[in-house]
Length: 224
Image 1: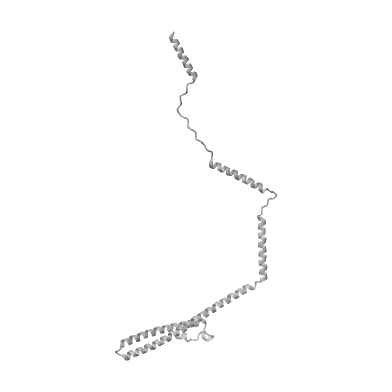
Image 2 (image 1 turned 30 degrees about the vertical axis):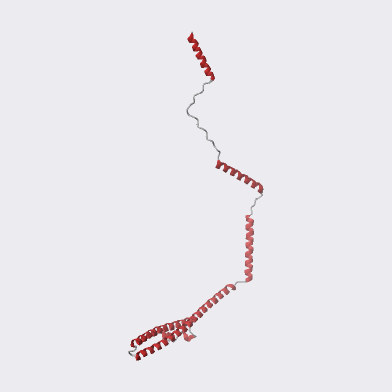
């Protein structure tokens, strides 16, 4: 189908059944913009051609040059009109696109509102309050049960906490003393080595006296 056929509704279509849809109207405006843009390009080329012709004739053929400038002026006037028309169509298309967007947004919001209403139809605010109160009561009961279970039970055995703490501190002190002894250790003083060479024994006084007596006896025997 040609551009003009689309613009003027050739072949009938949905337009005769209650007006076009926003999407159809937007598409037609875009087609019109495309057609006018092509017209702009054509006029710009014609203006350039007439200007070149006017320059070519110049003073040689003033009549031809003037005719070229007149055609150039007409083309420029048409081009200005098309520029204004394009601006109007562009504004209308943007407004229609925004309206179409708003329509779709409102439609979806209405759809969501209906879904929310349907979800709330089976809800009673009084029942919701009762349910939340039941949940709070059950949570409180669960906390009480947990607290009761976590308390230590002696099953008849009672101990003095102060006595147990004192015993524990005593054990800790013993363990601390033991660790300190293991860390420091007893101090050992090195002893001198025993000499390997035997020392001459010192003669006693009695031994000296016996030697003197033996010498005196030998002298007496030699004199006989």
